[in-house]
Amino acid sequence: MSGFADQLDKAGKALSDYLRRGGAEGGHVHGGESAGAAQETDGEPPGDILDDMGDTVHGAVLPDLATAAAPRGASAAEPPVGPPDASGGAPDEPPAGAPETAEAAGDTAAPAADSPDDTETVAMERPVLPLADASTAGSEDPGTGAFAPPPAPARPGRPLHPARGLPDRGGSVPDTVLDEADYPGLALRAASLRGGAHRLEGECRQDSFGMYGLEAGELRAVLVCVADGVGGRSMSHRGAASACDLLSQLVDEHLGGLIGRGADDARDLCERIVARVARGMADLAASEGVDDRELSTTLTAALVELTPEGETARVLLLAVGDSPAHLLREGLMEPLSVVDRTAALPADIRRVHVSGHHLAPGETLLLCTGGLAGPMDDADVTGRLLGWWGGDGIPGRMEFGWQVDFRTRSHDDDRTAVCVWGR
Image (cartoon, rainbow, N blue to C red; front, side, top):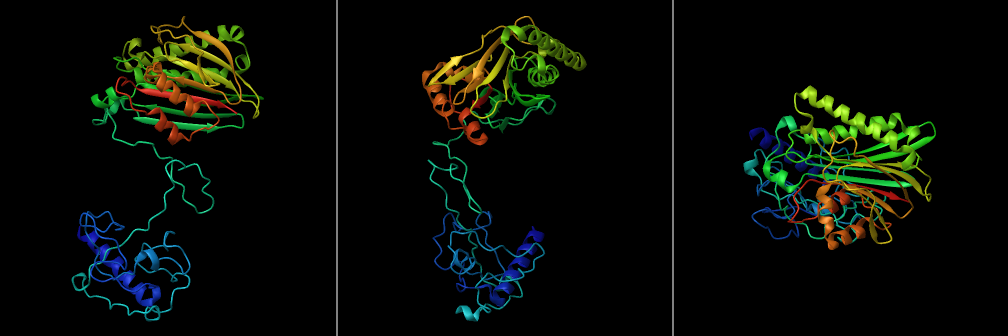
C-alpha cells in the first residue's frame, strides 16, 4: 500500500504544481469540498473519480473539476482535459484560455506541502457524461467524438440462476458467446448462453453454434448451424462444437454441389457429408478413450446463398435431431425443419432431414436449440420474439444476446439462437 500512497502523493504534488503555473480557473477547494459540490453519500462524494471506498486524496488543492478542467466556453458536461502524464509531470500546456497564473484567475495558489499530513484533504470529482433515454439508447449515430450508450434493458435484474463457480478446466467452454456479421443482402446475429441448471451445478454449456463465410469461384454463401449437446453425456459439449466445425469443412469442400441446389438434388450429398461428420466425431471419441455416445449432439444447419441487397436468397436446410428452424415473416413463425426428438449424432446418420427454402428481404431465418424452442411453446414468448426479430429492425450483437437471455422459470437448459435477416 505504501507504493500506492507514494504514487498518489506524487500525482497530487504534480497537480498542485500545475495549478501554481496557471491551471486554475474556478478558485480553490477547501475542507474536502469542491466549489458547488453535492452532498456526500455513504461517506464519499458522489463525484469521486477514485473507487476508493470513501478514501480521499492527499497532497494537492484542486479546483472544481466540473468547470476548471474544461476550456473557456465549454460545457461542464464535456470530458475534461487529460490528467498529468504517466511520469508524474504536468501537461505541456494549460487548457485553452486558462489564465497565465492562478492569481489572474482571482485566487492565490496554495503553497506546495512538505508532507501529505500538512495539506488539506480534497475530493476529486468525476465528470458526468449525459446518458441517452433508455427508449432510444444506442439507436443514435454517435458521430465524431460523441458518446452513445448501448441499448438499455427494459427491466434489468439479477439472474435467476447465478453461476456457482467455474466448470472443470478440462471441460470448460465460455459461459456466453455472441457473434454477428453483415453482408449487403444478409445480416447475421448469434448468441449461446449457459442454462440455469448448468450454472447452478457448475457445469459447462453444452450448446454450440457456427457461422462461416464460404466461397468457391463465383459462388458465395454463409453456413450457419446450431448443435445441442445431449444432457448427461460427459463430452457432449465437445461433440456439439466438433459437429459444427466438421460440417463447415465438408460443406466448404462440396460447396459447388450444394449452393443453389434443391433438396432432392442435394439430399444424397448432404447425407454423405453428415456421415463423414459422424465419422470425425467417432475418431475424436476414440482419441479421448470414450464411447461415441458421450459426444452425442443434435445438428441443424442452413446454407444460405449470398445475393445482392433486395434479392431473395436460396436456403438449403439439413437437420439431425430436435433443434428446430423457423421462418419469421408477416407476423408469423413458420416451422421449416422436421423435429426428430430421438435422433442425435454420431449414431443416427440415416435420419438426416433435408429441405429447400427461400429467404426474401424482410424475412428472418431462425435456428435454435431446445433452451429457446421450449419457451417458444408459449404464445407470449413467440409474440415477443416476432416483435424483436420479425421486422425490419436488426439488433446489435449485445442487444441480441440480451433478448435471447429473457427470464423464464420453467426452462433452464442452455439457450442458443442464430438469426439470418434477408434485406
